[in-house]
Length: 467
Length: 100
Image (cartoon, rainbow over all chains, first blue to last red; front, side, top):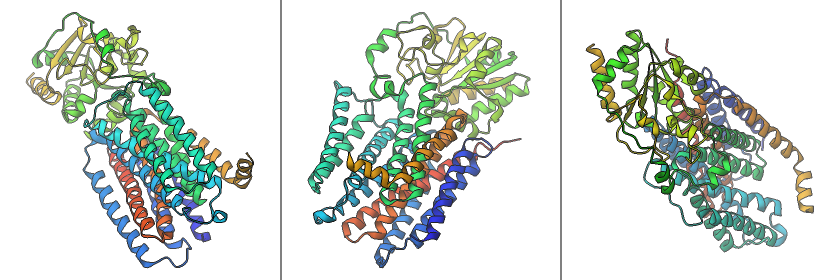
């Protein structure tokens, strides 16, 4: 490897660190992303032209060029076309591709060892590295694809009986089997195929039972694992940019995973090993909050909002699904013009990923300063005249405070029940994403405004305009 | 065990870098406001596409059609992760621009 390439890798590594640093602040985030992207492009071009290998056949270059072109076009098109509501599954899909790449590299490297003389065989530490790349790459590959399928709704949670036991035994078996391959120093293609298939299946089994509400945590965890897979292949090639880049993603992803768990008051092991969100028995048990609900109309709600001094909007994923983020902004502008103090209460896990709601609202030009985080808005609810909950459910469910039997018990929520009036817009009385009933809807201060978020809000806006 | 100790002594620098990089990653992310979690996850995801470098090395050294073919797929997958990841992060952050 030429010294120029080493320097390029060094520069790229520094851009990754700076990029991540800048990504952590709203003002510099865009610049940070650009800096890392530049570093990545530098590293790719540098590798292509300064690799220092001798006699690389022309056909290899042609195929590399073709692969880069095809992948760039596909990646670009997907990224430009996707709707912002579909972000979480897209991150998951891209992540799966990265894992797939790592797993293929591991397979090719293992294959080089097949059929060579014993004295020429790779050392046990190299084989260990290769196997680790294959196992982790496979788990992130199938795991991310399953997460993707589950988030875009084409797949439901499936729980095999005793799935925890099956998964844990399977994981131990994988580790034992990999150790066996290393110790035997075998080059058996059959054994490596079994390991590959077992890892791919483990990735599926690992993600398939995890409840919908816990999906963001899993994606973040898988993201972290892809970073580790990249770092491991970096060790294999003694390549610093891969090693440091991969480890940065690995540790950043892991911290992000813990931050998300904390926001939902879940432990990581609870997410991975505990059933949540799909257990019908719990739903039935907590679903007896009883009481009657109070329906309201758009015009009544409009009057309530019009004469309020302070209104807090609580947006949830239902708002995003209905593509109502633009109408809600219109409503907010209208109310502000009428002298009402309007702000948005953003729960850390509103939407399908932390910060997802902020992206969606930013897309429809909502002023950044109006988005208030949970800890800052909660003390303001007692002084709030009207809370408008749009398509949110679990994040305003008081069961988190007062029902120890509820699966979301202990999760920090937005204390909207402290406000003077609560208007909840929902399509139906169906339970939320976590699959549990919400006693807020039966509160005497709550009025239910049924309907699709977009049409209900549009009606609300036109009623307000007429006042 | 012997093998392990040998591995450690041969790769001491690597291990130092690894451990320090873990701490940098943690420190960089620890205090990020939750509003940026989604773009951050997406940006970090694009960075994990650095595995593309390994895929390129594999293809440059490939001498069998099998290695070349598998390397091809690895490069395609890796570059999708890189390009798609950075592009979509940029699209998201575009929306965060302050409007006055």
